[in-house]
Amino acid sequence: MLNQVSSFIQDKSFYFTVYENKIHIMNYKRIIILEDTHISFSANNQIINIKGNHFTLKKLLNNEILISGQISKIEVLHD
Image (cartoon, rainbow, N blue to C red; front, top):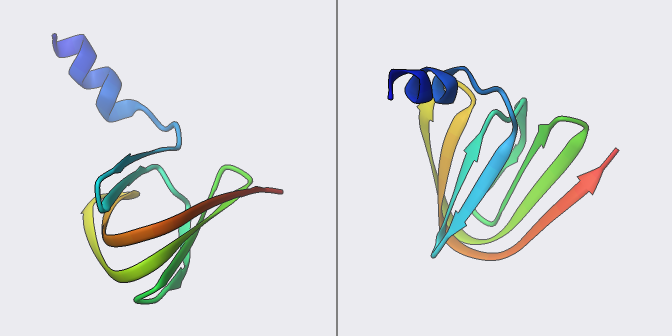
């Protein structure tokens, strides 16, 4: 079990998980736009745009955030 925890902590892969009215993002590089209706960030030669309403952002750990709000669109653009 300790190996699994260590592997999780050291994982540097970018990914995001979408829940009802929430999106959890791991290992992003930087936030580009941070507004109430639009959040954009970069990760691994990609730009991720999230659109909706009433966004709130919580920083959990380094390069880990949780966005809450009414998500209407998630767009992933590749460089």
